[in-house]
Each structure stands twice: as C-alpha cells, then as structure tokens.
Length: 99
Image (cartoon, rainbow, N blue to C red):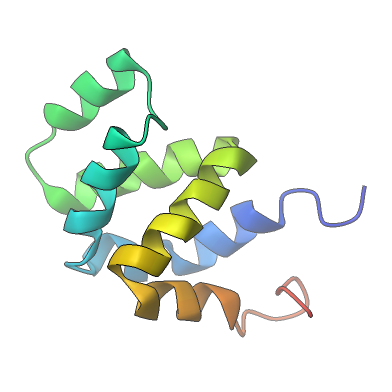
C-alpha cells in the first residue's frame, strides 16, 4: 500500500531535532495522560531521568503505532506547534509528505 510507514520515515528524519527540543518535556506527559502508553511503558518512561532518552523511547513507540502518531501530532499542535509545522512541511526528499 502506498504511504505505508511514511510516519516512520518522518519521525526518523526529525528524531534528532525532537529529542533536543525542550518543548517535548510538555508533550510526553500529555501523551502519557491521554493513554498512548501501557502501564509498563509508563513505568519505563518514568524510570528514565534524561529527557532526550525519554523522548527517544516515545518516538520508538510512535514509529510502531500510526494511531499514536496521530495523537502525537494533535498533542504537538497543542503544546509545540512549531514542531508540528516542521513535521508537516518536511523537506526530507522524495519520501516527504505531499499534499
């Protein structure tokens, strides 16, 4: 199917930027509160003291679940709209989103 996994490539291209952005400290707790993670995943995230590593774990989860990715985009719109803009206007090459 065309477009399968586009969100995975998108997350990978923007991973370095997302893991370093301080606004992700507001995004991750909202994703947890909205139920995108199991209890085990929540405990795993809580045990990671470094924000960049925590974001990296979140991105791993998002890359496996398109519904979680949609929730991530909605949460970015609320908490860090500049990051959502970067994702949606991705200039990553031939596999970028096209409208």
